[in-house]
Length: 246
Image (cartoon, rainbow, N blue to C red):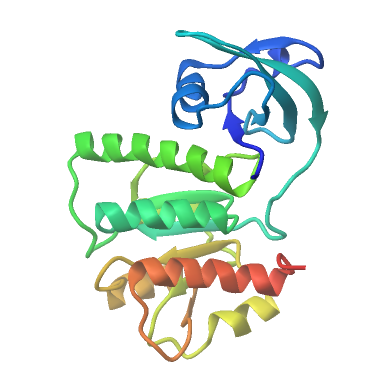
């Protein structure tokens, strides 16, 4: 059985070798109730800023879980190429799925955007979903072994993202009708930004505006992929070409 990994926030100064550390309430509930861990069992704790700490459960009571910090391991499991996934908002369950799997595939930043065919969300719903996405990022890092939490940027419109990122260098935009493949483009210059459309894809006008801003339209193969599939296929392709699997 793999050693459980627990995110404890950025309180790195409290994590010193030999110290007792009281887990934050959410982490404590997870250890005591979901994992049903017992005194003496090992776990790893991480702050999301790099490396992880070996630890063991010291005490468990009704309100607290205390661990004994053992030593810090400066281990990283980041992808060879830092990539920002610029993902148009799609249906809630599929968006959650994309964010979870993008973390597993090493995306350094996730930038949710509203494009012409995205599902409309009120500001309140956007805020709620953004909070959920951050929770998903933490859980995915705990599961996959990453010790650095990817950033999830505030939701922006397609045009606002282009304006903020201009000139868009080393960027690709997925377009099933593009002449050039993602693999061919990445072999020449590995992209730092990957733009993925919503259900129904980007409009021709959006693709033209992205291209004018410096992005290169690319396809992901001869088949038309669903939005959630396209994001993961693109990240996996870039990982393979950058040597992430070695």
